[in-house]
Structures are given as structure tokens and as C-alpha cells.
Image 1 (cartoon, helix red, strand yellow):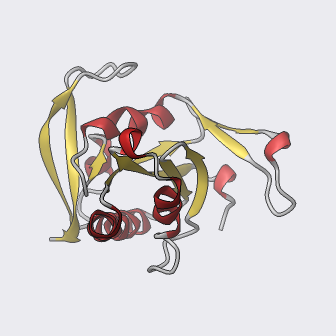
Image 2: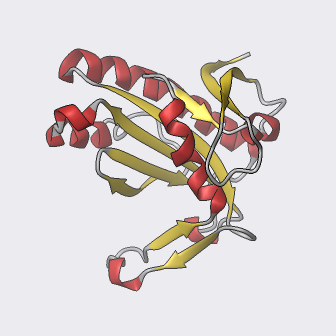
Length: 187
């Protein structure tokens, strides 16, 4: 299995705390990060970085079926954790999932200053990397938003998607851009 930074295509999964600018509960954000541990495994899922109250995961599924299974698992987990966090901490989460290739417009750049003894650190840059961060603000609490190309890429793998509207996204030539959510179950 290739290392994440060597993968042709990666799946990025962002989890963001809703309403955290008012709350600023660092322990609750840490809990959101740890909520993904001890659950069903996803292929090579790693915490790529934490940006304030947002946790970015990355993985490199090897086949479209792995992508579909990872997205289904992630969607179900976000819904489950949202219920738990709403009940236990008084805040919700929402998420974005998107794919990016590391071959053309996007790159994995090594930042040696952030290396650990176990792993080199790579920062992902490029327009496809930014897309999910632009989409997440349109995502309802407890749900996972996806870009328009993900349902096309995963067509035939049984995932269910729902268009909830359109948006104008900075740096994206398609305007209006379709805003889609994924459902946890397969058809």
C-alpha cells in the first residue's frame, strides 16, 4: 500500500465543530478528535492536521469501493458523533469529504520542520485541496457535504447523495456550484 503522500488520489475528511466561536471548549474539540478512535477502521485514516476547532483526516483508499466504504463509514460516524456531542457537550459537528489527486494541480509538499521520528510531514496544497474547506460552511449540522464530482466518481457503488442547493465558491469556475450531501446508507 503506498504512503499517503505517494498516493495518486486521496480522500480528505474534515470535521468542524458548529458554534465553537461562541463556546471555545478545547476539551470538547479534543473529544471530537478522539471520537474517531476505537470505531470501525477506515483505510489508513490519519489525523492530518488540526486547525482550531476543525480536524482534517486523510486516507488513501486503493479502489473506488474502498472510497465508497470509507465515505459511508465516515458519514455514519459523523451522524453518530453529532448526536453524542449534542447530548454530552451541547454542540454539534458537520463535515466535508472530498477527493484530490496529487499528480497535477495539487501537490504534497514535505515540511521537514514538522517531521516526527515516525513520519515525514507533508502539506497538501492546490485548488482541489481547498474545495472542501469552502464547501463545509454550507453543511447542516450532523451531515457530510461533498463536491459534485464525488457522486460521479462513486456512481454505481450504492451511495446515496442529495442536492440541497447551489453556492458560489471562491476559486471555483463552476458557478453556481451544486451543494450535495451524502447519506450513510447504501441503496
